[in-house]
Image (cartoon, rainbow, N blue to C red; front, side, top):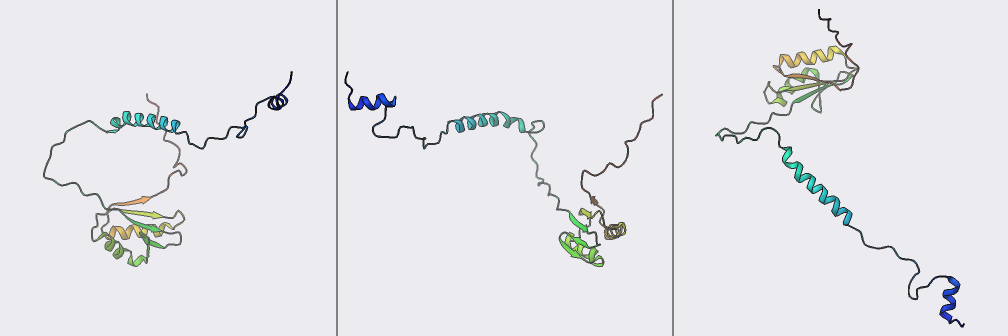
Length: 164
């Protein structure tokens, strides 16, 4: 049995060779978007189902009046006390003697505006007390001390007396 030239190459190599291309398959240069579309459709369905559940409260039809909307409260003033005793109104350093007038200028003469007092943990108690007194003298009644969360416990939990 005679072999042709083509059969001789295929018999020795065991496989067929392509004539005009590489023997391996090349990678596709296209992006498969089918999984992306599947995920987007699932998300769309989830949001369509959960959107009506996001309304809070009992559905009501409120009456209409001539009254306007309630004004949003103004941002509170912030007084900061550094460890070295430096006093700041918002981000501006002021001398302690000028604290009262600076606060009234920031508040626009409105003493009912809320004031947040932020003091460094290493600041002297006397400095914090002086600032609080200056706020009280100027008529600021809504004063809050700002602290950080996650500190040590204040003490043991109170023990309830046994019931008779």
